[in-house]
Every structure is written in C-alpha cells, then in structure tokens.
Length: 189
Ligand SMILES: [Zn+2]
Image 1: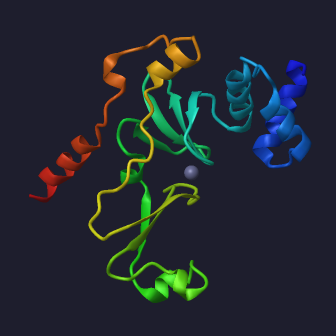
Image 2 (image 1 turned 180 degrees about the vertical axis):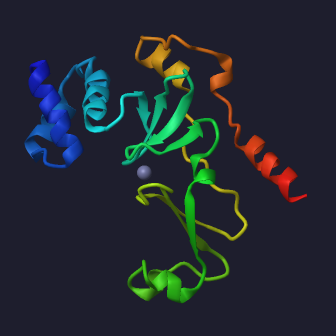
C-alpha cells in the first residue's frame, strides 16, 4: 500500500466513506504502517482553517494543539480556543442541563429508555463560538464535570511514536482543572 493511497484512505476513513473492504485491509495489515499516525495528523491539519500544530485529536471538533506561544491548548475546528489542555475544556463551554422527564424525552426514545429524573441529569456541552455539540454526559446531579481525556502527550510521543516532543516537561501531564475552580471559588466568596 503506497503512502499516497494510504493518505487517501485515511481521508475516506475520516469522512466515513471508506469501503468495508478497505477498512478490513487496514485492519489486517500484518505490520501496520509506522507512519499512519503522522499521515492522520497531516490529513487533520489539512482540514482545519488554522495552522497551530495539532498534537492530538480529542473528538470530532476538538484538538490539542501547540499555539504560537508554545502553549498546549484545546482548540475547536472553528478556531475557538479553550485554553490550557490540562484544564477540563468543558468548564469553558456552554452547558445545557436536562433534568426533567419532558426534557429527557426530547432526546431519548422510547420513554422507558430515559434516565430516572432526580437520580440522573443530562449535561450537553457546546462550543461558545460555533455552538457545535462537543460532548454529552449522563451523571447524578452534583457529580463533578467529567474530564474525559488528559493524555500524557510526552509519553505518547516518546514511547509509542518514538519521536519525543521538543518541549517535554514533567509539568505537562497534570490536571489543573482544580486551579480554575478555586479561582471561581474566590470570586464568589
Ligand atoms: Zn467551535
């Protein structure tokens, strides 16, 4: 499989237009092409309207990128920046919380599939700029906002990809969400 064909396949994979046969070909390659992650990043980079370097994709719209000042931040494909990737981006998003059966019924069918009002709530998170829906969580009321993914980027690049990031530091892999929450706590005192 040549590199150019492979890149085209990755594009199709992202678009959801890849054939079942090609998916199987990719899955069954005895030795996976070592460059696949880099090809994937290249294809992702081609598709966003900005040029901050993508380090990892978080979901359909969000990426961890290195910005022009060397910060690792979460950025939406629309260009909106959520700031430091070590702080749960959900804390800086728009949130809609569904609590009642009527609100649940708008997104669950049939009704018996609905969560139990009072025991569960549905939180929907949106980009403040393009209003794309970025995540949904179903949790008991009062449950902390779930931090879905805090990757150890340095370790991933060094140990799994064999190409360490140039700005490695032990400080990159820590959850700093609490700092933001404490800052808000100070303001409401
Ligand atoms: Zn957006």
